[in-house]
Image 1 (cartoon, rainbow, N blue to C red):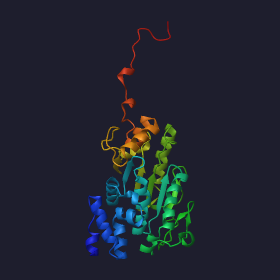
Image 2: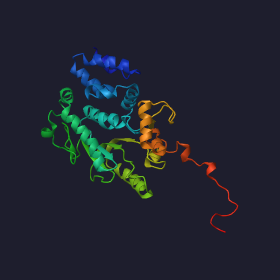
Image 3: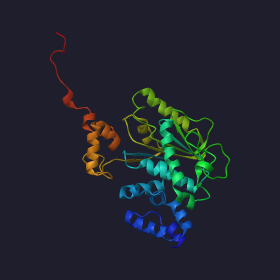
Length: 315
């Protein structure tokens, strides 16, 4: 295959055509071509280099294309179980390191314990996926647990790089425990809003304050990504969605954003089971439809108004 033609191919619209093209790249026998195409095509990287066969779905393919074309300064609000963290926080982060090992990335979540879960998934991949170290030996260690300068959930991890900055290649922190004195080239906020921090005005205010403080933990030319799911009509995501700094990408479980719509990824049976299991249409509307006010039960109903000739309880 002509390497120049491959790298200029871009993203195809249909996943079946994309898979055929990916197979041609894989069978070319040119590891340099495979490595470079992995840097340039997120779907190819996650499906064929990271080995995620479950990403083989047209809707997920379209999200890979979209994120691959514009990964930064977006707020991605997607429904639960639709692979937003797998595509953005996991796969795109590893791809970014393959592109530029000098990146210093901070993963934020609602708590540091939750952020470490995202970091652990990346660590497991870099420990077990030998394709990465074979294609990018100048970046990824064959045995990072023994070879890397830093390799722990607490301290973060490093890959092979030329700089001597104190920040790790990837570190994990929570909005409940911000680092001090660090400056990162990229901030990723994944699930900083959750069910435990949207119940009081004080909690919501704290999220907003700490998010603003986190933005100061950056180096020149920094990038930001926000990934999450709605929990309340006045959660912090509601403010970020109208913030002109970010491009909003909102995806619901159905094609029309309503309960009676057709599922975009899950089966109808699976979606119905989830709704039944939640047993709360407001929660379903938040988590699966990304619209806390989607249901008529959450709006004012004139039938609730009752008229009395006498005030009840007063004779």
